[in-house]
Amino acid sequence: MLFRRFVRKDALLLLAGASMMHLFSLLSTPSMTPSSTWFYEAPVDLEPLPPPPEPAAVRRNVETETVTVTIPAPSDPTRILPRSNTLPHTSIVHHAPGWTLFRNLYMSDGTLFILSSNRSFPEIRMMTSTGLPAENTRENIALREPTRHHMDIITPESAKRRWGERVLTVKGNTLLVNEPSQFLRHYYHLCAELFFGVQAFWHGAHSDPSSTSPDRESQVLTHPTPPPLDRVVFAHATVDGWRDDPGFNAFFLRAAYPSLTVETWDDWEDRIAASAGGDRAWHFPLLLLTDRSAAHRGEICGSQTQRIAAEAWDYMRRQRLLMGMRVGGWWEPVRAAVLKFAGAPVSRKGIRELPMPDKIVITYISRQGGHRRKLVEGDHEVMVEALEELMQRKKGDLVEWELNVLQAEKMTKDEQLAIIARTTFLVGVHGNGLTHLLFMPPTKLSAVVEIFYPGGFAHDYHWTTRALGMTHFAVWNDTYVDCSQPKVDYPEGFQGNEVPVYGPTVAQIIEDRVDGKL
Ligand SMILES: *[C@@H]1O[C@H](CO)[C@@H](O)[C@H](O)[C@H]1NC(C)=O
Ligand SMILES: *[C@@H]1O[C@H](CO)[C@@H](O)[C@H](O)[C@H]1NC(C)=O
Image (cartoon, rainbow, N blue to C red; front, side):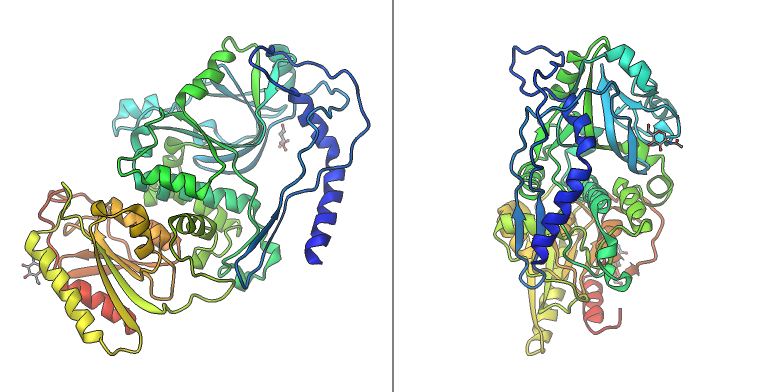
């Protein structure tokens, strides 16, 4: 019943918004065939408004986690309304350094255009860059500063003079990734950084905190599904430029966003070439622009975390739009989709406090079969023994304990994710394998135990773990640091194959945490 009421109300809203839709329909050609012209063809007949399409309505049943979706009937593409002489102006829905959600952004000849009669927009360098690979040199930093060629603000009159009627709408919701393949080709950077931020920002932009009480807000696991992202454009990466060697990026992207169309550099170049000379433009009704260099110009990424996702996450947190912040609720749809695809149990339900785990599952991701950042071989063995010894001691405990020593390179993705989906403690040397923390079920105990070369530290997994409401321990051989963050440092030996660790310390951290001492 409730569901039906929603549909009705939304339909009314749609009717009210119909005049907005006129504008959009005006900008799109009814059908594009390869031979059709770039010019907008005016509609011949103006028909009366047909009834509005049924809106997409989504209801989640909190108890059973089933999702009901009704798909709107396709709207009649030939429905075009009286012609208006103005292009829709650009507005910014949300903005954090490196993350900007635009309504009505335009692109012509490679330049992103903001159409407005005023200039009250965020600083352009906080939204975009030249997209060049980053190096830490004065020269390179200067080369990444955007110019008017990369983004510009023009008046609607000027746009009209430049483009006339030659503006085509690229329908749907677009994610424009303005960074080179430098970082995209890594499982961590694509999934735990870029898409982690995308999910935080997109979810936040469409979440509805009024639907829950503030004290529960941080604990919500389920929430209305945001509208889909229709396409991602990796504007500076080729087809190989966003794929990592083990193949996790493609697995993740296809599983988490099964309907997302991927466009890469060549496709974006097509659109640039087709609008060369700047006498015509593409119109993007809703576009999320992400830019790594711009994110690094922000305080939170640039000075505190070095994580681009942290700008998106923290902005939405401050706006109180990040639902289920303390339990990873905003991330849950992505996690659930990937685990479901992998055939692994999802096992999280509804709105409630973080549960205690049913079983204490320790998963050690070994890098000993890899090429760098390995433990001293003897220390690896001692640590496995210390963890096995812990298992022995816990036999007969009220809760069951389980130990997994993973050599990820010898397992399928499904096998890895099946274990991660029930892991309480993820243990490993600083590195890509810890990215799997994205798929751990947050519980009252869930923690990542990250081994660094003594004195070394980086925020990657530390920040990500905590953003999901879990705990992180940084281990330096026989000592550890909890929560309070040491300084970022990559001392000699950080990348080497002689990382020391005192196994009993790792076992102790886990035992103390389960006993409530940590
Ligand atoms: C500037 O113009 C945009 C639309 O072009 C509008 O959304 C925004 O509210 C305007 N800002 C001010 C301060 O007038
Ligand atoms: C690591 O800690 C153990 C136990 O305290 C100690 O015996 C060993 O010398 C330490 N290793 C390094 C490299 O500091």
